[in-house]
Image (cartoon, rainbow, N blue to C red; front, side, top):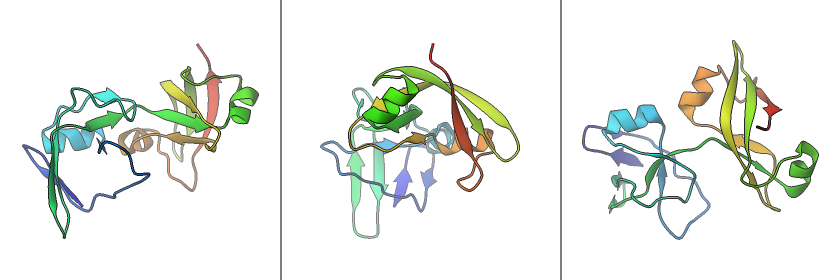
Length: 146
């Protein structure tokens, strides 16, 4: 998949599920600058007033009139995880990421609780790179609940 904006394009972009009622494109701040898109920081699904983008695949092209965001960092967890960690759906927490070279504390990490979720934190590539995190070496610790 290729994403095309007013100032540039990103090639070889992954398409992820699950399927949704409305198409959305989640990019990093760096991606937004490359594309020339003023994508707002939002929770997934909060798409009102967001900019559009063009999607190109080997099979078709699609022009979205909206739906491009920089995704708010968040943690998915089950109700049991939330009980153990003493947090609730919609809370905002701070999380320390222990990467390969440095430790970084992320504030304003949204908590998302649902029965079918497993404990997993979602950050974008800019945030992961800033923390020196990679899948093989990084781990996270809940630091505080304001």
